[in-house]
Length: 217
Image (cartoon, rainbow, N blue to C red; front, side):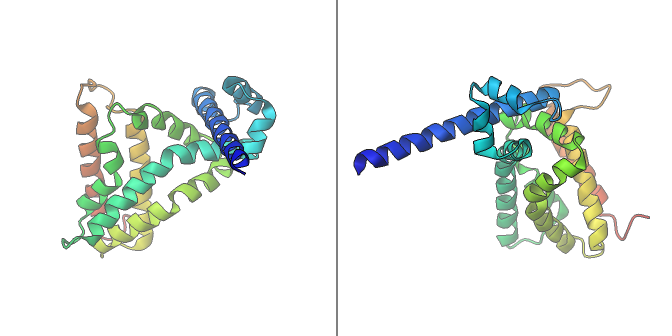
């Protein structure tokens, strides 16, 4: 019985190691070449596994893309929701500035980490792919985060209609993606502390847009 249990644990560990190798290879190739130009066979070759393993662990190429994306984004979402929950549990009134800093909290201590060396390229590739492919992946990953943060922003800005707030949140995400890919504007030197400076500027810029009263016609 003990031998069977040990064998099952070894098989499980081996399976997880194979799964991680496939995701690592897929992530690297998709960032370099894009989803359409990256075949499952190329991923299997890069991961040094047989092609059947990719189907076994992920079901399809789209399933593999979803797994790669969720692996990088899920910790970001958890950090955001945790920061927002802590903010909402406090005694101070919610402010747009505090809510947005909770949204951007994963990036404040991320300089030099994989979050900034890998995630921007992966996100850029995801948003460059056809919506029919990526929309379900993005909906699954971001629906709860978007709903929670929009609800908090509406409490902080009761004069802004919900649909308008969703537009503003949508534009904020676009600005964030641009900033993560390109830390400085054209004509501005990229200094050592430029990322943190730019992040503060992004928050301030977004606060100003979100706090505008009423709908922007």
